[in-house]
Image 1 (cartoon, each protein chain N blue to C red):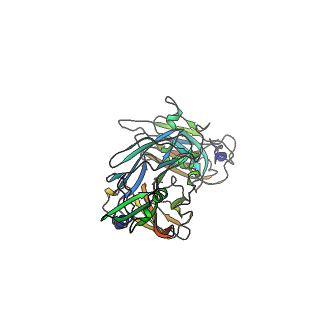
Image 2 (cartoon, each protein chain N blue to C red):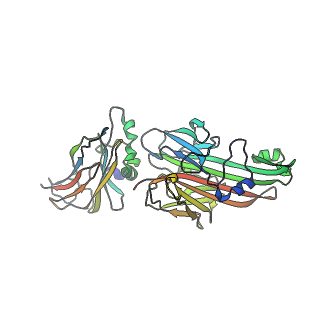
Image 3 (cartoon, each protein chain N blue to C red):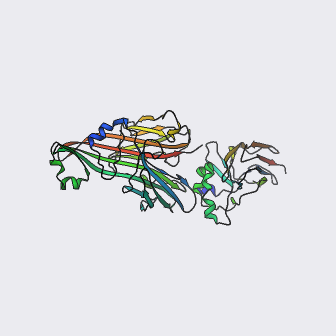
Length: 272
Length: 168
């Protein structure tokens, strides 16, 4: 299922998200201008959008308030020249440390919907605002929790793995093959974690970029094994988009709620 | 990685008598294009599994606008960058050099005594600004038989590349 990241003020309900189902091709992505760089100091510029085609902005811009950049030393790096248009956001990052940077967009939160005065009310917020606003007491309320990440990695100089430290919430990527060390015709291994543990049986979708120039999108469906691993071999040098999604039942103050988590990573396969 | 690469520069020639040597000839083709920049060129010796034994040469823009500017494009020597470059502190003495004009260039590779007998490949990669990229390899067994040579032909960014065991 594709989570359609709502724009400010337009909160999608859990029900709407379910209804969207697999029919929605809205895909969240971040695409850096360059994935692999050399020299002492370099700029990259990054596009972010939720679109039907990869990597063509044609739906809505990615919100930048949930973007974090982590440097090779694990410290946060400020994004610069950030701007959000209607269908695409953009920002720059100055790379001045050798190693791998993680660019991440997303966050965790609650969605709720209920009937009130004959209308469907929709709400989105945090655990704190959920409690403070008494959302759980709304009539026929449906609540779900969402943890989502849209990420990409760029490397100045030699790849490093300091930014692969995981948080232990929702779906996360634990690269085995470094995401900036992928080449056409060579096998890639990624491990997915769910709440910090190997995520077995998670559906993974892999799509090569520039799909607007193909008659057939050619998405590849993969499933993680018992160790949370997927392996694949990109046949063509290109940027790729990989998405993992998982839904399970959780609880909130003893009441069952749906917990949805998604992880997206953009990477490139270079010509051998 | 870094310790291996201190062999950089030139490490060919076990079992050769004094006065024998190995040389490499690289041809950079003259191209009739509107905007020509001399190519970046990397030359290295690898094992059959692609691991790097020795960096022989890296020709890139080091001057005028400063090394930092020139190093921006080192990653376009994609294979060399992956196999060796990204783990090096550039410039490397005896390896780094300025870009070269079209024509034939000879690199003296020996004599040296560090290379273990075995199978290797000599790799030459060229990448040109607003141009293309090309990589040619010459497989060889070490030590080379005296007076022999091996040739590889580039098609676009490189001309003829010759690895030659020179007579005493």
